[in-house]
Image (cartoon, rainbow, N blue to C red; front, side):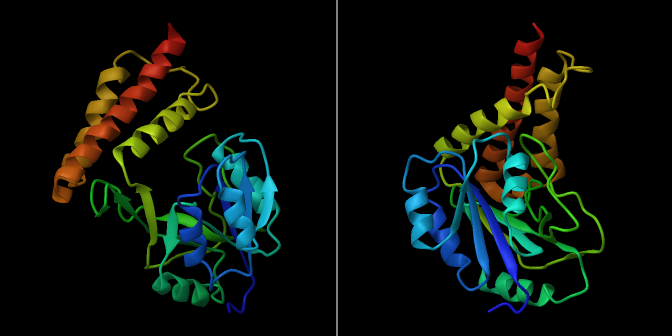
Length: 248
């Protein structure tokens, strides 16, 4: 058992395929698990109840808002934020256990993501350090619809072992999430169109592909690295296309 109390926060909607494995990987770590659900219609809540998770409900208003709501329900100052499709290794558990007693206010943790059955170690996808372990008295999430980050404050350290992110097991799942995220990213609150031009529709996708596949060595991840770079380019195109429809 971790000597320093810890709250784990998770936000969910229809995560029955992921949640049990996520909770299983956390079983030795937290003092409590806070789950904020935004209207699951599958077995997500049934699984959470089986694991004696503290369940709260909130209509989805953006990822940053959901996570800050979860943060407000945490009983302890130290908080670990994880997603339902993530897992924690034994090595990371041991590292976190030591980190909680160190003189830091938060820790960046590397993320290792799985794309179509392979761990992606290039294309800018690794190590992708994210501030996931932190004191809630010091920090909170940006109140953004998508791509929210914790605002760092105080003394921040780095952990070595990664969170394992099973993000896109199938192409269908990638495209499903793409529709959700691009719609949020093109929202007026994130993109007011002050400096948008039609050139973005072509230049940003080309830049995204070049950045991932060439400059960040995505080619070293084989055909998956190429496909991921193409899909990420399409992601950027879809955001810009949504912005174009708003402009005309």
